[in-house]
Image (cartoon, rainbow, N blue to C red):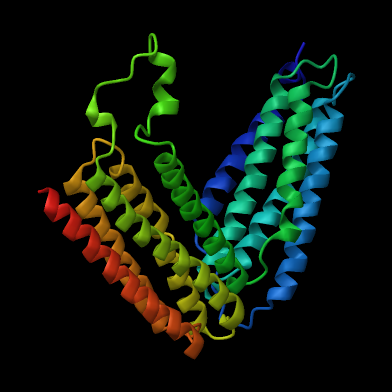
Amino acid sequence: MSADSCGGKVALRNLVNSINCIRDRVRDGESNESDGAFNLSNFWDTLNQAVKAVSQEATKLSLAFSKPPLPSQQDGEKLAESIMKSILTLSTVYYWLPKSQGLALRRLVRDATVEVLEGVAQLVEVIMSSPVESLSQEQLMSTGGVWSACDQFPQLSKDNKAAVVVVLLCEVRVVKDAIEEIEQALAEGEDPFNDVLDDDQDGDEPRGNQDMYWSENDRQVIGACQGLIKAAAACLRKLKSAVKSNGDFSTPQNVSQLDDLADISKEISPGVDDLALCLYPPMDYNGVETNVCKLAALLKKVLEIIRSSHVCGESELTWVQFLDGAIDHNLQKAKDLIQQES
C-alpha cells in the first residue's frame, strides 16, 4: 500500500499541481509595483515568517504520512489546505518586493522562493509514491531539502548592493577557475590532454599527432590571452571592492547603476570560457582572434560603465585606467602573434 492509494490522494495531487502553478508564476511574474513607500526591513521580517511557516507545514505533512494509520481523506485535505495557505502567503510576500529595490536583489529572492516551492512539490510527490510501512530515505531527504531551502533565507543579501556583491563574487570564482585550468594545462608539459587520454594508450609509445601539442607560438599566444583573462579577473575583484565600499541603493539611479554593473559583469565569465576553449590544440587562430577581440571589447565596455557609475571615485579611476591600458596591450600582443602565424 502507498500514500498514493490513501484517501488523501486527490488532495495531494491537487496540491502538487497548485504549487507548480504558483512556482511558474513566481519564476516568470512581475512584482506588484506600488506608489507608496516600501519598507525593506518589514519586507524581510514578513518574508522570513512566511518561509518559517512553509517549513513547519511541510514538516507536519511529512510526519503525518510517515507511518500508519495514514490521514483520512478529510485530514489529508486539511493538511493540503494548510500547506497551500502557507505557500500562497510566501508567494504573496515575494510579490511585494518591487523592481525599484533592485533587479539583482529581486532575482536572488525569486530564486530562493522558487527553490522552496520546488522542494515542497518534490516532497509531496515523494509522499504520494512512498510505501507507508515506514518513513523512506527519499522522504527524509526531501523533507531535509525543504528545510535547507528555507534555512537559506536569513543568510540572503538584504539589499541590492549586497546582492550585486554576491553576483560579482560568483563571477570572480568562475574566472579564477578558468585561469587555474589554463595554468595547469601549461604546467603539464607539451601534451595538455595527457591526463585525459592516458587510459586509451596501449603500451608506452608516445602519441605522434602534433595536433595534440602546443607549438612555441601557441604558447606565446596563450600568454597574451592569459594576460587579458587576468585583467578580467582583476576588473571583477576591483569592482567587487568598489561596490562594497561605495555602492549605494538609496536612490533609483544608483540602484539601476548597480544592476547595470551586475548584468554586464555576468557576461565576462562566458567570454572568458569561449576564449579559453579556443586555446586548446589544435589551436584555432581565427577563433582565438575573434574571442580575444570580443572579450577585450566587453571589458572596455565594463570599464566604461564602471567609470560613469557612482561606485567609481578617484582611487577607482586609477585602476580603471590601468586595466584599460592592460587590455589594449594584451589584445595587440595576441593579434600580433596570431598575424605572425598566418
